[in-house]
Image 1 (cartoon, helix red, strand yellow):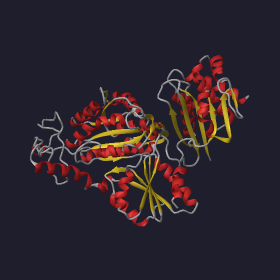
Image 2 (cartoon, one colour):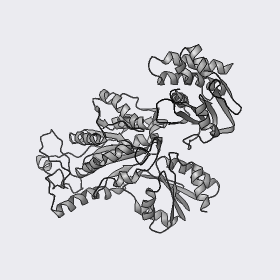
Image 3 (cartoon, rainbow over the protein chains, first blue to last red):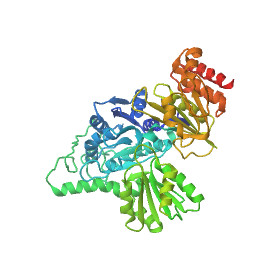
Image 4 (tube, one colour):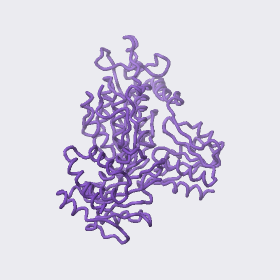
Length: 384
Length: 172
């Protein structure tokens, strides 16, 4: 296989471009989208690369259609992705729920900009965290990843596809305008060094009868492929193990939704990924994610030099959320600070996790500028 | 050591491409480098800023906080960002288009692009050449390699020419 970009080498590219290249290397062969700042470069790269790898990149009439198209593509057995920013992400909410309900592996990239509405199109924000997790209606679970560097944007795109395939679920790669537009040195590995997962397929006609049944006891049903000879009914209505709508039987609804939630929540340990920096003896703990975590790491370094025992927990996965880990940290720390570019979103989850064991304070910044290390240090020193 | 360089101008002057090529040149030399940008929503006329941070140690600042070097190609860009230049920082300006209120060096980059290169659009490469000659922040050859890699196909020669016009002006 020849790739339309250099592999097995370092390159100097934007986060958006890194996401597109990683998707191609992860085996994505269908992209549908609608241009929007600051995610358009992903679409641009996909339009250039897809025809060269026998894939499809298509512009839809809007973001509702974009996510609908990738859900359809995924049911034909193709790995599929779309990318957008806040206003488009809002439009995708209905079909995000459809993808959760139909257990369709897809990757949705949200390159966050300031909102609400059209807000600040070119500037970074982290205001879509709660929307990514809870924006679609009804009880559910899904996976949300948050990269801090161009390299992580690359690596986590591959991880997003693997998790989508492994757990038959939509995965949101929640990045921001800064990571999306920033250029950094990034290592593009050789394709044969990248571990790729593919969804579980029915191994027999018998198995194919239960595309929504926990027939293997791992909560993840095998997924039949359209056009491969199976009769399969895919619906957003509550359905039984065979996929047939059953809209009034409470026990069928409860069983289905609890399984969809449990397949994510029971596998937290496999899905969740985080990094720590000087956390072991930290009295002041900063919790951060995405672009802000870089300033937080620098803040920890400076505080340590000044003799303040600070440490960092950098979250790479925002959902599922490790509430138990936060409680452990809260038991040891004198104070937890959550630094994020919104008016407090992960802050509330951390507060819940801390469970009253220690004080949790928000270091908030909105308007498009990232926290500088000194913004974080200033807040911490005020509290000492 | 870490150097923070900011290019400031208005949309359409190629400010971001200049930052990108400087960044790529640094990457070619194996240095750590981050390049970010800030621009208005309009495709022409709004402010346009490209930040390049180059260092031989890990980089934590993602945007220029205190610039060591500011290259200003338009008064609007200069005014928008002049406070971010260090007191002892180096200010490089297009002397026809920017009227600074502090010490500076520079040349009429746009005029040079029009008269010596024959294309006003190449003002970004002229300014980049001047910067590289004055500071030696990256090697001339690395920038030339970066230009070959990054500019649209078919425009390599005119961009290289513009870079060299600026470089010679800076080396005077």
